[in-house]
Image 1 (cartoon, rainbow, N blue to C red):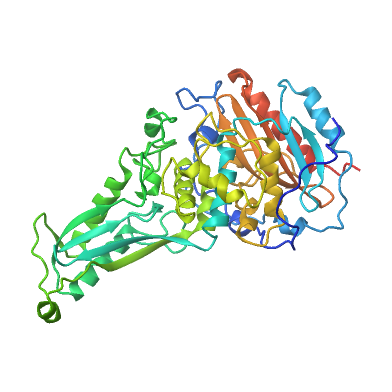
Image 2: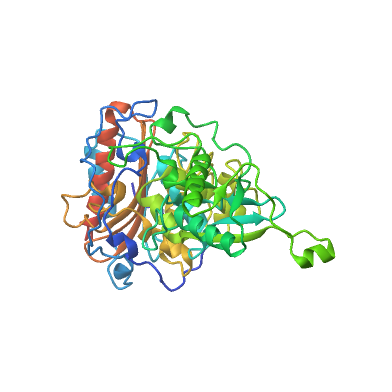
Length: 488
């Protein structure tokens, strides 16, 4: 069909393009164990399983390989020609497709002109493409440079150290690793710093307590399946966890997650505090009052002992998008709610994400039940998703990090094995995948053959399970056609 001539534009003004860089997209995926199980391993048994199974590569050993990835910023030259014949190219792919009923919108990244639209206003189940909204909201409300803190507090009146969860789901069990995102802050480092602070106050024995009050309400959505915890798809959303709650050997093709991630992290901290020379007791002696306290009758108030900080929100958003990590996305949803003065909860997160974006883009009929995309009740239209993508292209704030944080075709994350045989598409497609048993989606940006940057959303749901691979192939064929398009 012909492109829609007039559509409501993004609320965001067209400012100078800034901030979209290849950044950490130049690093290959270190391992696929943390990827969304249904984006990467659809053969997992269960109600969301894609049949037949999608074959995947063997799990790569954790390593980084520097790659020269074309950054979207390098393509944003307004003198590059705008393609005028995209309709013919896309319709040709659709006419040959074995699956019908796609919702599609393709726009010019700079001008926001709609180049192709088909069923673009119909809300659909987006699967993990939901994370595009969550990541955008986090960048806008929390800020790309913000970090999440995990702290210890000391109450001398009871000689109790409290481990306080601050929303870092990517804590490491060992020492902090400044060059990492997962493990940037380490519980062993926190324990060592805590022990040093206690020893400086002549405290050698303490009781321990755990504070997870940062998040309230239920920690597991009623729309999720408890069996998916063992499959590694999700875990109870708590403000303290190691490696997003994963348990078991990292050498396995996929791992399960814990039923009680905060409790597990607390156990590790306890062990490390003991190793640092502090005795942990259920009934310790309160610290001695100071002379000043004795004279005034005042008891010393709890004080902070130590703190470790996460990677930046921009880096965490990238982790959530590249790895399609449901746990990180749900934690980000809670943090978006907190940033807006709402309770950090699974109940508040979805609406908080929509509220955070409402001043930037018009989200029409978008409805969210969660912030990761596990729920089939999430509803987003191609038009609304593409609106967010285009707004990020012209943004001059943290939102400009969005597309650069997405998986890269043929190189990273859930696109590692896609677009590998197309020279123009590999490395030029930056997009978020979405996969459930009857859903396939892709939303992102691509540099076409003439150097024009295009943003796109392609969605289809209610697909027969035995045709889902054909649907995904059609999606990839359309995006590859855009990458190869001079189309004038």
